Length: 174
Image (cartoon, rainbow, N blue to C red; front, side, top):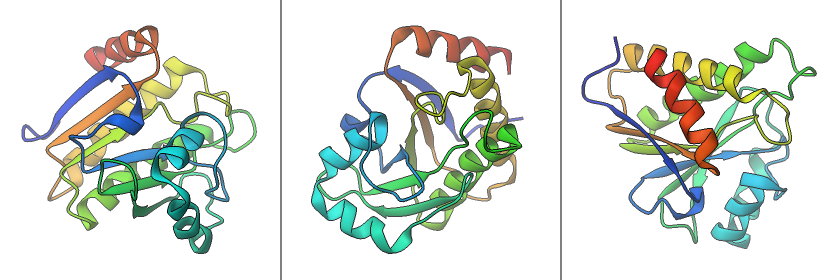
């Protein structure tokens, strides 16, 4: 059973403009450098200081999460997670679940009360969306049962309404 003090919601929007959240999650690459998709958008929004803060933390491995200040973004923190490349990094489901678990552990460590997640590994890393959504929902629900101080709000931020609705279906079924 999910902790009743935590609200889970979904929105369609820009993860770099979630100004009511303490932290957002970056779908990072191993070197924590700017790239395409979410990582590129977050680096552009945060500014050059983010690259400097990331450099000593890299490289990270699939499933790992690290935290930096958010610099020019409206949030306090950015949690950087390296999701698995589907069909390459195995076991992909465990590594993807580790991303969510490790990010939520960091919310407890840094007293982050609200966090926004993108659909990790579903872009350039090729993870099938519905399968990734099932892993994400289960990992988050499992962590909410174990964290003594879970965040009050977990928001999943999607680029498209189609993705949001597909994730909502998994969330309702979970």
